[in-house]
Image (tube, rainbow, N blue to C red; front, side, top):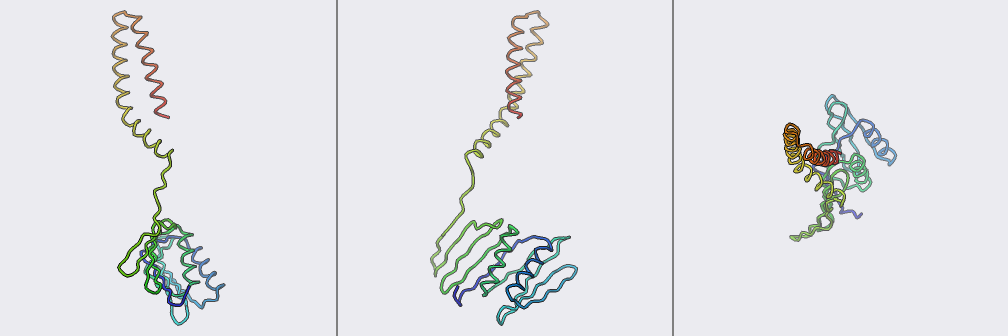
Length: 198
């Protein structure tokens, strides 16, 4: 990355436990960063010295978990890499804007994955990548089957009620041969009901 490279992280939605913050602090120390941290009832702040700049990562406490809040502009590639690793590890959401000379690349990240990348050069805007829907043939068939089931069950119930009423009428009037046909039809309907319920 060249010196004019700058990355802005906004609309962050990262939720995690204290262990991940400790891992981040350990990684920063291993990378040679000078830092300090401060914890209160509501926040955990990690201040990192990056060149002449001081970057303060602000973690908001929510019960026993934390949420990274705020917008961060970084010019340090290593620090940027660590923050992106955290977005990935927490399967978080973010909008990442990469400024390079006269160009901006915007990445929309959901659940730790890039779902859309847009490149802006002057007034031109170009979609570089857009994740398509991850729908499989099996998912479509299941959805169609579920829809068919929802439509079929009420009709099937009415058919069974009608056959039961008919069977009662046939048995009380002594028409046993027709009653056997009605019982066969009821068994078929019962089998279909059992298949749809599974």
